[in-house]
Amino acid sequence: MILLMATRNQAGFSLVELILALAITSSLAVLAFAGQRGLRSQAQFDADVNKLVSSIADAHNEATAAVNLDGPGDGTQDCLTNPAGPAGQTYVFAGVAWSAIDAPGGGTYRMDFYAANRTTQVACAFDSTVFSIPSAVRVNKAPGTGLARSLFIRDDIGGLTVCSVTSVATNVLASFGAGVCKLPGAVGNAILTLNLSDADGHTSVIQVDPSGLAKRVN
Image (cartoon, rainbow, N blue to C red; front, side, top):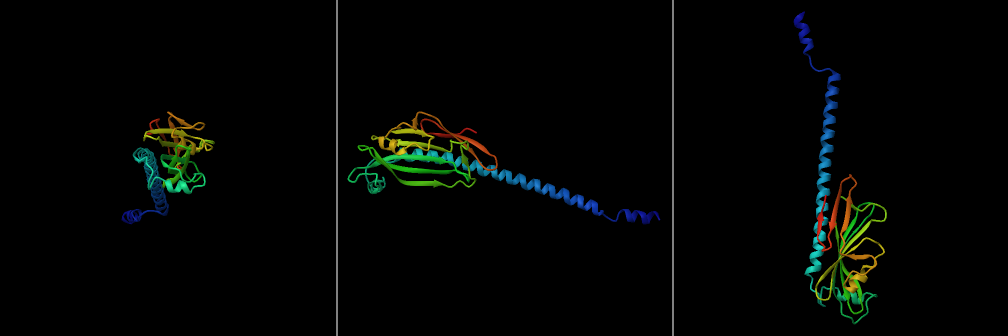
């Protein structure tokens, strides 16, 4: 009798024990998956913020290195065929604008290249590059602060002026045409701050200093 009872007690797990074990295993699997997704999301956000810092540096370097002479590749032909540009005028490379524009699905980040006639102070954009940001990073989500631009403006002797723009109404063509920060709306010697975020709650701040150099501050 004693042997028979021992055999029955060692028969295995009950249904309740099996259900409890499966529930615990499933919960641990869900937590592990959520943790891995969170790590991947944070890593993608960090990579995209660093990409934006690099893109601002690229805009600065493009404006600094470009040859300020009339000729192929400087936008002359595009400006001459632009209705805003009078025919027969000489256009030179005028600089680069780096732009961050907020949108509900994630910001649009781009670099636009400008040419200008400094006599008539007429300017036009002749080329652009849009940056792909996989994590849909938004910029300055607070109302009225959904745009930020850094203008890297070439003067007539190849020097560089950096302007900060945070108003949608600012006419950046006026600054590129003049070769300087032309008020209102384009401000020189100012720090431009970008408050970045994504749908998963990650945040970061990029600052562009008055010389045009960008850094991530958190």
